[in-house]
Every structure is written in C-alpha cells, then in structure tokens.
Image (tube, rainbow, N blue to C red; front, side):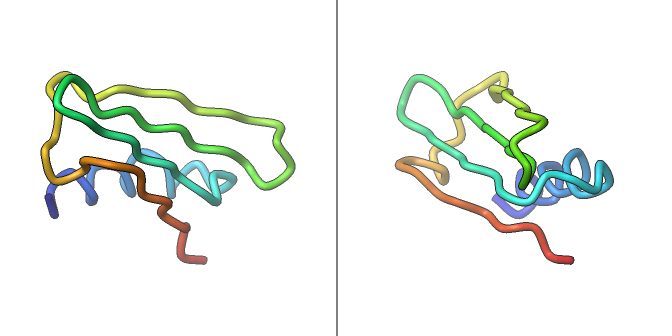
Amino acid sequence: MRDYLLDLVEHTHDLGFIDLIKVTGDTNKTSIVGIAEDLSVVVEAEFKNPVPEFAGTSNLHSCK
C-alpha cells in the first residue's frame, strides 16, 4: 500500500493545487478523485487493477 500512496503523492502534490484526494475502492476497482481548494480543477483516475488495501472510502489531505 505504501507504494500506491507514494505514487498518489508524486502525481498530485507537485501540481501544487490539489488539496484533497478521495480514494474509493471495492473488489472491482479503485478510483481516485482530487479536487483543488477553489474547485477550479478536478482530477479523476482509476488504478489499472483494484487495490484491496483501499477498500471503502478514504480522504487524503495534502501536506503543505
């Protein structure tokens, strides 16, 4: 799970405007939605394969 989290941080933190990432997963898929604080940018993505460790819903806050 650590590698997946590092990948999420690598792809969103450097953008500088994604403050919150929502990760939703089940047995079929794992999806990610990132939102800028001013709602000007929304990033949606899906892992190629489901990640069992992300079952359910998690909110990850950016560290500034």
